[in-house]
Image (cartoon, one colour):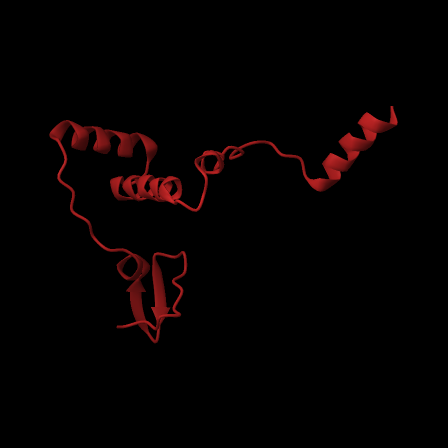
Length: 106
């Protein structure tokens, strides 16, 4: 079954369209065959098992990062800031106001 160019696949593994079940991974992904040294393949499988992510997702994420750094429109210094606050405990607006007023009213 072909999908229109405007079709946006859901985050679900399966999508029901006109009583046909389509795997979104079949629509969105393409295969890539890599030739790697045996020790790299072993490492990839062990890393995959430890991280709980499939090797294909790890490779995809690596190339996504590489794409950001290789983009000539973004200065290297700015690209290096990507993800710097990931997991940081950043206060919301209300908390920031409370902190600001406490610091400046004392």
